[in-house]
Image 1 (cartoon, rainbow, N blue to C red):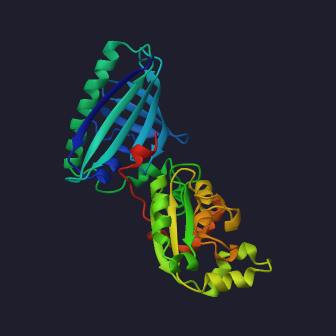
Image 2 (cartoon, rainbow, N blue to C red):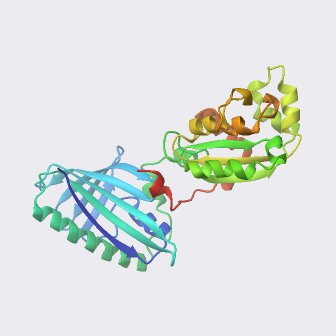
Image 3 (cartoon, rainbow, N blue to C red):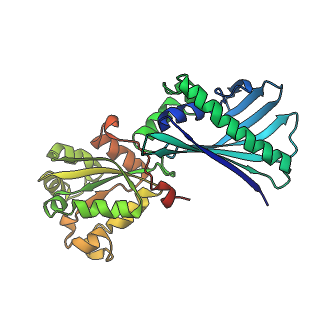
Length: 317
């Protein structure tokens, strides 16, 4: 059975500053480290003052949850256990804008008591040196140089705008159509997505022009009902939203129900509130490609807000 070692501390600095320092996993703030670098495959080589050289591979990064996991897979001199996986997690302390930092290591079952005890002391030392580095001004600027080695500029733009399909940062465009707005259903629809566990990252009320409606429904331009659809969609205000979460595109479509309210199951938005297909309350992205196009059509990048919710630890494992 694996051995888990966990230590935690309150760091009296804002979470973004702490994250900027630990996110690269370069140990630049730790006096025991003489240097570190990362190769093109994302392998981080760390050289310690005692001549120990260790190699780590970052296996998971969550910008949203402020957590990073990395594994030790090579050490000179060799360690006495088969493997160790390290995770650093941050949580915002809302009362004074401090940061809760948890450092956890999962050792293979062959790790000795000496190895696990040494891990505890190293974690406590890490907290002390991190506080000292932050007091000297570390983390005031985003560690862009380190991030760019593992995330390209195009990838950064993708995560910041239309999300990252297949992850917790997947995003979907959801619109409450003019009939839904006029009937006062916006609040209920927002409530359903919030109660499901999804996160609202953008919203605005807009009355689209017919030309804008035609751009939104461009894939239906050859349908006989296209002109009438655009007329209706531009007939009143539309509540445009972007929701974020794991599987939000497929789940969001299921929550809306079938296009024809009469074919929608009770419990879905259209099944509960709609009668005719021409007044079916809402619209939702049908695919990652569709979500990308719709989000970029309706929102500028600066209108999408990336933020961390305190409830995420109760929604995701």
